[in-house]
Image (cartoon, rainbow, N blue to C red; front, side, top):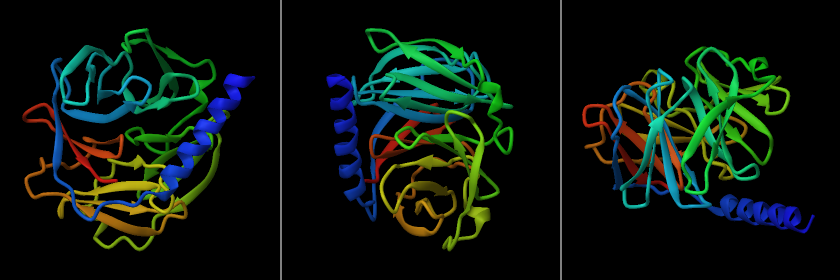
Length: 257
């Protein structure tokens, strides 16, 4: 009980700190990681594990594509296979494991060993109850609130994380650029109050933020030498947006909070 109470207190303090952060006006590249494994052109996301300080990057499109671990300087720590064709992947600090969603529906858990290495992904018993609005939709998660979010046609579909039932839809509003400029499958959740959701403008090289009600609230400008991207290839981890350069098979990180 004491450990559980301390965990809740820690999450509450973390939530307060997160609520106070605001995005940077501009950012430059500060971290690079080159994928070692073979296969896959669409990097799905990068996830940060605060318990060990490692980053985990995963490819969409095939269960045999790479799932790799790197450190804060971009050095390789471990490489393996995704073991699921993922469309969502995040860290659950309460359960101390990774969770995710799959192409055409369903969810899974990926546990880690004492070294921080991912083990075999385990499909959850009732996970097939979860079905994203589109097969290719990327799903993200607010673990503390127990919600999952999936973006389709620039409408956020909000699901209960336990029952996988659709709770509501949030239409994104006041976007400063044409929706045709925005990556439809590069959706991420920041957790920061008033800037909860993020999208990437592939034409103007900027991160676009929307609040919990779906209203546009600001942007971060990235440099003009970012890798060209149309869909997927965007992740958010440890206050950084990561963009995937499929030509060089590299994730580039830009600190935006």
